[in-house]
Length: 165
Picture (tube, rainbow, N blue to C red):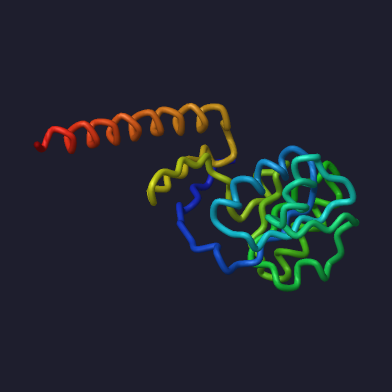
C-alpha cells in the first residue's frame, strides 16, 4: 500500500477541547507536547502515570480516573487514543469518525486523521516533522538536526547584533 501524504497544517488549539484516552507513557508524552499549545486537555483513564497525576493535581489537565464513555467525546475537537487495549482504540476511532472528530490512534497509523509531529519551538517559531507514522527515529533525528541548525542561526544573529557598535 502506498503511503498517503498528510497536509502539514498549523492550527490554533488554544480554545479547542482535546480528549486524551489513556494514562500511560505515550499519553503522557502527547499531553506534555499539547500543553505548549492549549490548557483545554481532558485525560480519561482508570490508571495514569505519576507524571500525569502531577499534571492533573497542578491543574494543567482535567484528569478523570475512570473508563472512557462515548459522551466524553461530545465537545471534543481532537481525540488521542493512547490505550493498550486495541478493541477500545478501535471503538474510539469508530466513534470519532461517526462524530466528525479528528482522531489519532497512537498504536495504529492507519487509524489517524493526523500524526503527532516531532516539534521544536523557540521564540514564536514552531517546526513540526513527521515521517507519516513510518520511521519515528528518522523524524526525531531530522528534528534534532533542524533544531541544531536553528540554534546556530540564532547564535549567529546574536553575535551580529553584538557587533553593531
